[in-house]
Length: 243
Image (cartoon, rainbow, N blue to C red; front, top):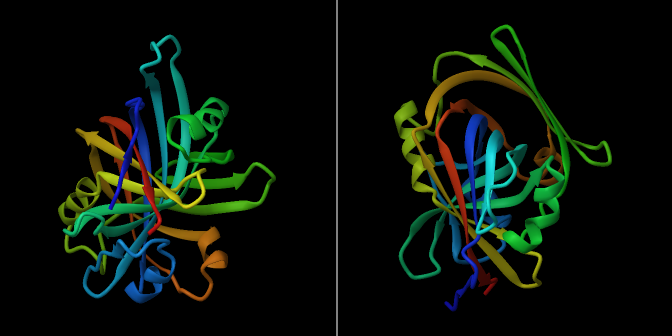
């Protein structure tokens, strides 16, 4: 399959403050219905597919090759599904992202240029109340995207046998694909993470946009993870045709 690589190696570097990952179980055949290309197929864990809502707070953002003149901070979020990428024949662990969202105007405006991704604006809130965190994300027009709460607790999951298994799953998904701003194309972005600490949480989800958008494909909350520290690097790799 012909892959059109980027002529400019755009990269976004940042320091992770904290990231919350709400993992949902979904039947693999139901997840497959929502994957836009045949060369992306669901990963299966104990008979289940997985899609997660991730919200991350990052700072010290730099965009290369632009000189690091400013120090930006943003809270971004996305739904991500665990998939295998078969575009080159072999099954390579990857990620399908329905859409990336950001509260930083600069990133939203540069997204189509840097990542060939639309990056809609959102208004997120991460509030800590004692040992509990409350998360609320709305679209720019006020419509809800996600609302949940969580606190530190024992790791329990039907997908992963341990927190280390979950960490291995996250680290293996370097490449990600998202429908691009170019008709009939997927944009690929690789995410490299280092020195991140993971902690198990227990939580409740009050509202998830996918429950309405994918209402024929039931999602069940499986586990909640908090990640802190470390560095993140997003590297725009180029475009891939849908077929």
